[in-house]
Image (cartoon, rainbow, N blue to C red; front, side, top):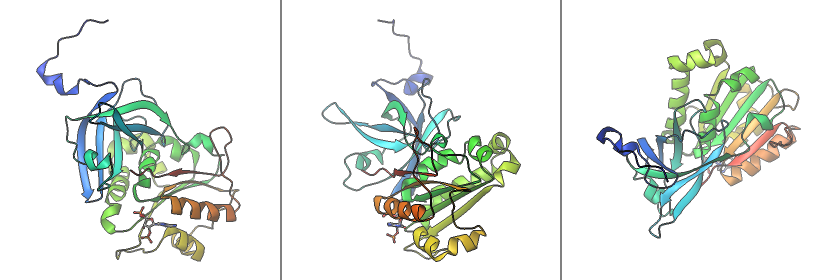
Length: 276
Ligand code: A2P
């Protein structure tokens, strides 16, 4: 038993009272379906950009209700950021969407996942393919200097139903391009490698259509002025809904890319965007 330290008023809200508890520091809502939040980071937590952890809230039965969440913040950030859907009847997100700064969430500090640089062989160009909240792991990877050190070109595609659902990603790209700290950390020259390709499927926007259809028609390659993916030059990470993941996997295989893993690095890796 260690002696309890007296808690001063200024730090009282930062002191976890539950096992594995972290304190919410900010919350932002984008649409009636999407929000992001930041929490304090356990001092001992180390993770690789692209990994996920289990987070949640205490249930009425005194047991935590946990779900897998990709860490959206980069590994050098002193806080942790998450990007979440709000499922109206979802056991966790119907409650989680109401969290406020000062509230506590449960966070198991055991990061895992396949969307990591270690699972890919060296290449020239990396593609990040996201739908909906599948953008989250890429929000981390896009702020990781290694992403730009390892590749000559970094392309992020994000397909959502409506324009408002692109906001989190669009703002992040803006931040990366304009933030002084990121410029310093990643290097202004390196940041020029970043290309952003947002599309919508159910609301008018400058580029409409599912990314899979735009790949099949060749439109995305024409728009970006790059050749279709090839195992010699291209690497890919995929995170979206299940149907999307299956469809894009088939497409990537048709270009000759093979699926890799931490223990067996190859040309692409896939993770499901986690839902309630
Ligand atoms: P669509 O509107 O045509 O269904 P969700 O919010 O349901 O997770 O979907 C996020 C985005 O992923 C939507 O724009 C949706 O397009 C798109 N999507 C869904 N299934 C697929 C698929 N099999 N291939 C490509 N995109 C998909």
